[in-house]
Length: 556
Image 1 (cartoon, one colour):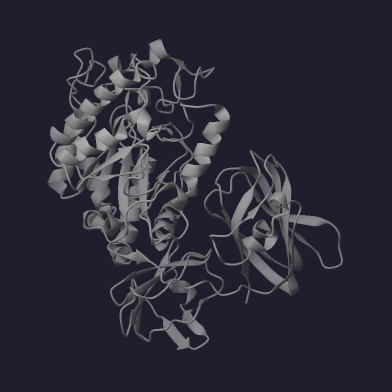
Image 2 (cartoon, helix red, strand yellow):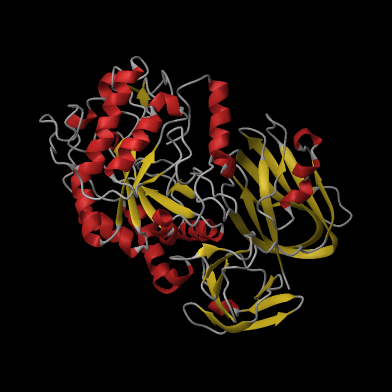
């Protein structure tokens, strides 16, 4: 995956990584109406699989090799050792049909498999190299790509291939690039012609240019193999969609996008990995779809081929939720309400689905809706009351009917929901003052208030290199707060933080919650405290912290 850039200097790599995460500016792709994109837009949810001989060591795929994408990589696995791991790799418990069944049950409509990662190892029977799973020295000696492709096709899902253009095993790579490009073009042709229909190819060029990859010729060759092939934006050309990595894209209903994200911290299998909760996985899916994007959720099988029990548990939890909520995901578009920290929305035909992710009591207040609501229901069943007026829409659901991860309200309109313009969030609870210890270049577009405006597309940001910072919010009057939700605009910069309040008339800050990483969404509940001033105290960060949204859970 894109975590560093091999082609230029380290400074350039950071700029390229930032551009990749930025989203819309990265791609000038096709309009959302292109017919060949229809199945992918409707799918909304796919499975990513990172797997290879490195699972024997439980370290990250490719990036743990030395030298590799990260350069010499002190402390990494020497190339001579890494490149021979396939001789120990014997995944006798690998069951392609079982993995595909897990994906299908979870509501995933397509599967993207790492046929070749940056380490150059081929999980398919390429005729162009011996560094492959079907090498006679491989104890497994079976074509993994063929097994997955056949199982995916049989299950009625869309088969998609990941292919890394960089190849740190091939001696021509980055030395005789023209010869190497011919090699990898031929491998791409093998994947597109030897394994049945391929609906999408997921390149991962680590920032290389179109010239580096001879991409114009490559795209022509691929379109000759399959005119309807969907291509991502990591081959030096815009492709069909852009790919935020390990972060949820901002609302964009003009250009197709897809967030790729791991269930744990690592792409490949890691024993005892720090796995996201089922709630985090479901809410990540909802936030992607609510932003009009897709989610490609990654798993990493163990070295024996079995899926880690915790990863399997997460997929089962998603499957359970999707049994009653899939109508609000598959086949939908994001909106009309733009995402907030509390809710997102999706739409299909004359239906609008409100995904409530953070409750503040039993009511959700929505901005006015220009079409009449003619019917409402709670997916999964339960009591609901909806009141619509010129001032907005109030949805009341008893706490007993709240879903732990995502409570979905279905609103049937007296007309189409698809032509409604995006609706900006309503202002939040009045805050008298908002302040920050640091603001990026003193630019007001990154001021403290941008983290409290109910708009996830704006953000508070600090200057580059900032390691510690505070963000303070003061209510107009003493308010009882019992929880908080925080969304980091660029994930995992924050490494240690506290949530604090200040007693009326006091000067000391009292900590009610603390943690390490904030990530996509951090949520905490605590014993109710009544105060006017609350703050996020960032104690350590890898670079200038930036927060897109903070939501207080206030007591009624």
